[in-house]
Length: 174
Image (cartoon, rainbow, N blue to C red):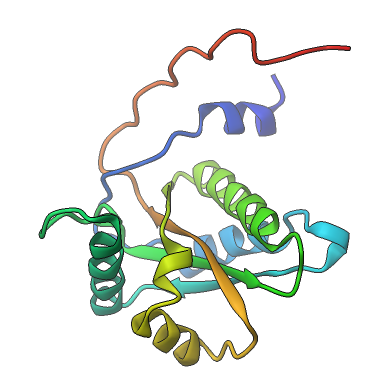
């Protein structure tokens, strides 16, 4: 099997991370994969905010937990040492799809480098809060953007479970 396709098939979401930070080179490769994801009409709507500051990750996690309605102490980022916030230019009609494709590219790149990742929802709501607006300001993002998702990222603490069997009747040839 082609190694790129094999990588995509073997990638699983990781929900328990080691505390070790990925290297700058690994992060740069993952971001590069996101930057080269397909975008509608080549408009490159997604922006990435790479967060490695544990205090800011904790603040983002708490806000995400609150939005999700989970009990105190639950960590929606699963202890990941890196959280990448994916936001995208609201003026681009395909911005949500473009951000989702970028996340997929970054997840596959992370897996290829021996890292784990997990897509986390509620970025849309989180970047509408005061904390989200403060993070955008701190990052220097001044154009209108929408939160697309978060990518929890790091070295897996455990071996992910194998993929479940694929559901039947999902492919139709005409």
